[in-house]
Length: 184
Image (tube, rainbow, N blue to C red):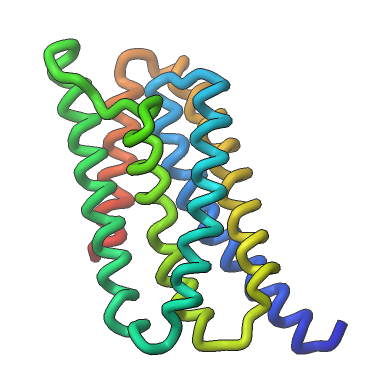
């Protein structure tokens, strides 16, 4: 491998880890609500797919709209996380009166996966300006996104048993914090 290829590999690896950390952190929040192993697998596979599709779409979008969509994509992700977090906190306070965000439904998985993968689109737009190895980038982003979401969901599941009934509220606070982070 040439020094350029090593540099590109290291850059993509660092980006994949950074993007995967969002999935890990947000997986902690969802996992604290209590989650079945089958749901962890489903959510992680969809997150891995979104972590491949979103940067791919971003890379194809490329330089033309990078300055416009970079901030917009992050803001959309932040708003989604704020809404999910607020709803989780609200439903934990209200108890059984309110139907909580359900990570087991098709739309619940899609919304959660989109919220943790939207920043991959922005990164993809940035990478679209350079001659980045498309296959390597997409596979690394997907692998790290999926693996780190599994780790986060499993850790959250374990921590959720320790926290008990406050797990959903605490998970919602984590989602709120990340939503605010994306918006600031």
